[in-house]
Image (tube, rainbow, N blue to C red; front, side, top):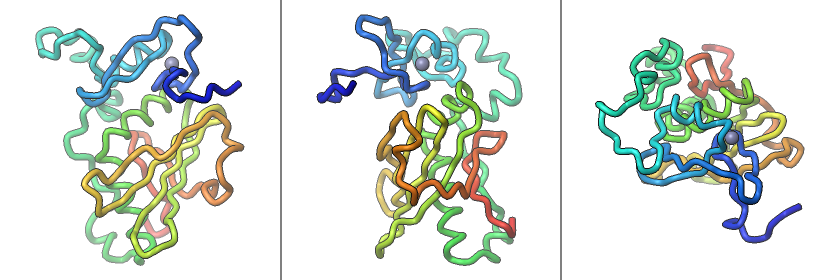
Length: 202
Ligand SMILES: [Zn+2]
């Protein structure tokens, strides 16, 4: 069943499940400005990722104690990674070819974006995703990053030259809907929640 108007269906931003008519959803903001729906099952995950619950002021004093006692892993997967570690170090980068450097750049841009939190949040609920980074043909160096689980996928467009270099392109529920060109899984989400291209020489 498909509802034609996109704004009629509400889906949980974390597990992507379509919310039932009348089902209570919580409103959370991953970035402090835009709010998304989160289903009751994923409420904990949203809190853990530091998403801001609608109507709750963001002052350190009011942070739930959970936030302060987070495990190392949780802080690595963390809500607000200040500056994510570059995917490869400078000396290795110098040994890579242009194609590989493009993959690394796309990964670095993605890791620095707010969407990293969305993906690590979903991975927490659904497990490790299959991941691909695919350059689009053309003169500009646009890339498509795809994260796929059996019941959900997210696809991001990375445009290094753009003011907002990463944006959500499309998402869906059926991995079978993905174009074959995006299913050559050449990257992964590492243990710290970073997108890492699989490059042999790394
Ligand atoms: Zn959910």
